[in-house]
Amino acid sequence: MAVPPVSGTQELVLASASPRRRELLARLGLADPRILATDIDETPLPGEQPREHAARLAAGKARAAAALAPGGVILAGDTVVGVGRRILPKAEDEQTARRCLALLSGRRHRVFSAIAVLTPDGTLREAMSETVLRFKRLEPAEIEAYIAGGEWHGKAGGYAIQGSAEGFCLWLSGSHSGVVGLPLFETRRLLRAAGLKIA
Figure (cartoon, helix red, strand yellow):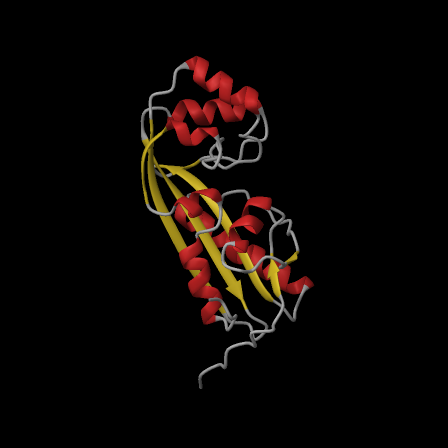
């Protein structure tokens, strides 16, 4: 039996405190979601690959938020930078950011941006954006200048594509908004499928 869609007046809950995700969501005309940040263990599982890691965390965040807001439509996401099978960390200190940038210098990498939408009836809808990027070969002075600017803090892979790091990117194939943190095509599709009214 088909599950009816939720009402277009249903409350949208964004399971993230990221201002970038709020800004991206506003581009879809959803400028005032309820913000409900979640705190789950983001440690990769043994042998877990970047795509799987992003999907698991997005779904986990959605379920954690739903436990606190059971009547809402939950939107959660997670963005993971991968080099081969390796998951790059979110840079919380300069040393980590410096290592990430050195690893990305002159090579291709992938950004997996997973989203999960959980409706009050328990239906979980999931999608994944995969973007391939290549950075120029970075000079040590360029890395140090970027570190000094602070944009790397808390960012997967140690960089923010929406900032000056975009000047390092030789080419990008995929979703720019996904690299920022919320792939808009996939987000719009899942939220419409969940019954939200989006133009």
